[in-house]
Amino acid sequence: MRRSRGWRIAGWAAVGLLTAAVISGIFLWRWPSDTYVLLPDHPHPAAAVVKVKHPKPDADSGGIYFLDVIERKATVLEDTFHGTAPDGASFVPPSDVQPPGASESQTHAFELEEMATSQQIAAAVALRQLGYKVDVSTDGALIVAVDPKRPAGGKVVPGDVIVSVDGRPVKTTDEARSLLRRHKPGDSVELGLRNEKGLRTVKVGTVADPQDPKIPIVGVLLEQAAHIKLPFPVTIDTGNIGGPSAGLAFALEVMEKLGRDVDRGHKVAATGEIFLDGAVGPIGGVKQKTIGARRAGVDILLVPAGDNYREAKKYAGPLRVIPVNSFRQALRALATLPPKR
Image 1 (cartoon, rainbow, N blue to C red):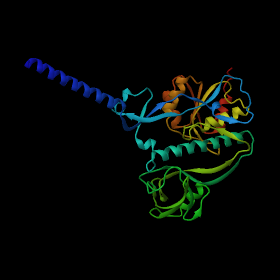
Image 2 (cartoon, helix red, strand yellow):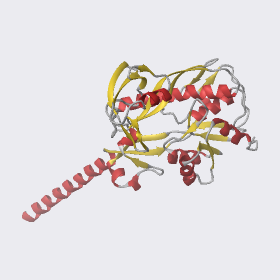
Image 3 (cartoon, rainbow, N blue to C red):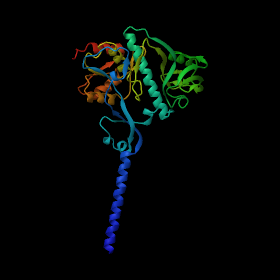
């Protein structure tokens, strides 16, 4: 009986150890860590989200595609053993995904606002290229990033628009920088800000620019805020996808919808932020976007020139990658492609 009881006790201990191991495994597999993981997503056809009145028929088999990145918290298992994550994964700290000083909801709202702005700019750039008149009025300097180690950290957040400096109205980013540079590093500056909640004023210190100690900075990255009036409605609905990186693709698709054979029968994926002057700026998640485009079998990938292009080439394989600095350069590059039917 003693022997039997001993085996019974040992058996229950083994069951307990197995149960603990299972629970630990489930914890590692399902429990989110503090690290974020970026994953490839499939390309999205721009034709499905860009709408204009009386679109021209497009008879070829090509198309314009925009790219995004799946972004989520890594599990404890993935964060501990990176090899357990899906192919194409990149692990980044929370600060790379959620700007310091902004909540998760604020960050998402700003990303949706960025997407809406990029859509309007894309339509404006495309229509101007086609010869239409587009009215643009500037209305402040949009804060797109905040350095948490600089004076502005914790006082302003991405999505705030600077509308005045020291009580003087600001319409453009150049005006904001010019008024700021009337100060000396170490001075305080009063910023008038606008966001979806209304207007407010904050006092922010300044520090010397590392590149030029004579220039005061507060630690923000600015982009032009503007009101755009198109000659006719162009709607672009991407649902819950945020960020500005699809601007280039949208501009190309607007031209396709209005009868310009931009893709020449090729499947063209494009990524890059587009600005009112037609310049194409760098974006994030290039590795995942390139892998997603390659897996989908698109013919051409347009990316911003420079670091984005060099990163894309690492993961492109047989996919042809074309670097561009501007919308016109993208159009010229596609115009030189032989037609594909």
